[in-house]
Structure formats: structure tokens, C-alpha cells
Length: 338
Image (cartoon, rainbow, N blue to C red; front, side, top):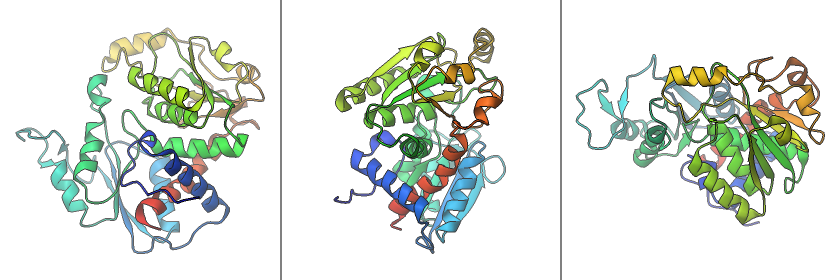
């Protein structure tokens, strides 16, 4: 197989060529079977967190350490200040530095920048542009890795694809159901958006189920339809958990914001209060075809997913989290020449 050219940045998995995604998956599995040692000796990755992290930060640090490299961790809340990302802005507000200047300087210190931006949270039409992470990619002189923006979570999707391949083997023709779940702290739809497109590109048939008002981003759904048509896979949407779960090989539970009420906490809370019962339990899992559970975590037990399912033999959630380590090693190795 001819080796695909390594990408210069990783902002969205969908922006990579299919051969690049296949290379990353193959390398992820090879690294898991036979870990590499010191292949990134002398390399340093700067980790910039504008909001919290548990698995992403820990798995990145562990990955670089095990590959012989180093990380520098910077949290916006404690280690530096607000940064301006709007081009041509008159900087008379709170931010004392522009992303273009920070990116240029940090590029002198590190081999790559991994960034988790913080969406403003007031307008979905604005936040979905992912302007901040794309500004970093525009001005950095080193690879930029998206550690979850408003629209995309490529690292989670890569680990999820790896987990799906381990659990199901050949993915073409297999059935994946995404179901919305109830939570007082819903997540971004980024993880679902990313795996939705990636799974369809692998030939999986995908269903998405959610209450009214919790539909995924319209442009992403349009992209998904096009990807499905290109790869001979099918996308269905539903407002019935039970209908969507029937015949599924994997049920992926995830709570995400209502994009209709995005930025309006009062309306969002009112809508959530009318959506009780959206939880994955043994009865729902039993509707599938030997269905297994996936969830990107953190997960609210007995609200999003029951204890019996999470702790049962068909739960893949811990394997998903573990595979973040191996798949991120693959990303780092390809981007940094390891």
C-alpha cells in the first residue's frame, strides 16, 4: 500500500483523505499490539486547554512520554490570559495578545500544538465556524491538533473507529445507532458529528435518534448524507429510541446541546426537563443485534446509561478510552515523523 502523505494539521477527521484515515487506523492497531519506544525522542507538544479535560490531557501526556517525547501543559484559567482570534480587531478589550502572535512564538518552542478551544456559547451559527482553532492552524508553523472544538472531535472519532473495528471486524454493512441521552450538563455534538461522518465513510449504516429540538447540525447532516451516498451507506434519523435501537450492532449514547436553544440557558433547561426517559438500559440494548454500548465519557450513571449496562459485558466505554492512547500515538507519529 502506498503511504499517504501525512496531514499538516488535524482539525477534522473528515478533512483527511480516506487513505490517511486508513493509515491512522492501521498504525493505531499496530502500536497497540507492539508499542513503539522513543520514536519521538526530542519532540515536544504544547497542550493548550481553554476548558477542562481528563482523558484527553492524560492520554496525550502518556502518549508522548511513552514515545520518548515531552509535553508542556498550559491551561487558560491558570497559566496564561485570554487571546484574541478575530482578524483585524482593535484590541481594546480583555485579551492582551492575538492568537497569531501566540502561535508564531509557541511554534518556536514546540513540535506541535494540541488545542482545546472554548466556544463562546452564545450563538451556534458563530461557534460552529470553529474560528479559534482554525486561526491557530493558519498562523502556527507547526502541526495543530484539535482536542475538541464546537463542531469536531477528531481524536475521539479515531479512537471510536478503532474500537468499532476491534469489536465488529469489517465495518461495512454494520449498524450503528447514536442516541441522545438526558443530562443536566450536555456536551457538544462534536464527538457525534465526527464519528457520524467517519462511520458512514467506512460503509456503516447509521441511525441518529433524539427528541424534537435536539437535531444535529444541519450542514453536518447534509455532509453525512453525501458521504453515505458516496460510500453506499445509509443515514436515518428518528425520534424513537426503541425504533433506532432495533437491529443495531452498536448503540452510542451521548447527551448534546439543543442547537435550537443554544446560548439560552433558561430555554435549554426547560426543554431538557421535558425529555425524561432517554437512558440506555438493558431493555434498550436487548433490541439490538447483540448490541454493544459506546459512550465518549464522562457518563452520568443511571441517568444517561444504567449501571447494569455500563458495568456489563457488552460495554466498550473503557476500551474506547484506552484506545485514545494508542490512536493519539498514531496521530503524533504521523504528524511528527515518528
